[in-house]
Amino acid sequence: MGSIFIIFFFSLTGITLNHTEWFDDQQKTSTIKGKMKVNWVSPADTLKIARLEIVELLRSRHKITGAVSEFLIDDYQCTISFSGPGYTADAFVDRENGSYELTETVTGIWGVLNDLHKGRDTGKVWKWVIDISAVLMILVSLTGLLMLFFLKKKRMAGILVAIAGTILTLFIYKIWVP
Image (tube, rainbow, N blue to C red):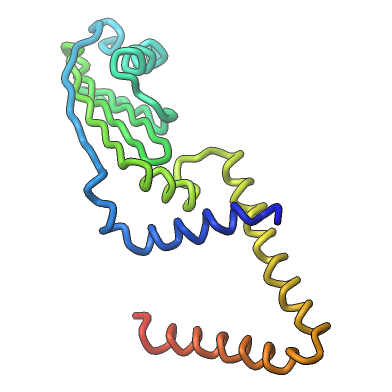
């Protein structure tokens, strides 16, 4: 019973992942332009670029959530990417004049739940939740199978249904999966 919510969660999000087209209308993308201090992005020595100040300015000014997943610097621009479950934001900062363009995409509650299911941009702790959940689901399956061997009247029918389910799954895979 301790894993009942997790089994429900991964079952529900398994369906929503399989039918993402049902939830496409929730995704919203917005683009914002702005300007920051030129001296933060213009030093010739890229080690002197004010990375922390740039990230914190973008976070405070635009309420950005998610972890910094990438901070790239080339001769002409800085690219900063933020990501989290159901969320991405990418900022492109012109190193010559400090102007930037920020594109933010929010996928709504179903996007968040689907990303949690996949472990996408969720961090180490959530990956442990996924692993522990998988172990619990394995235990639930094995204990169900084990219980079948103690139910004399239903043992043979249960074994036949388990074998038929396995064969059906393999058949569907072999015939209809490209």
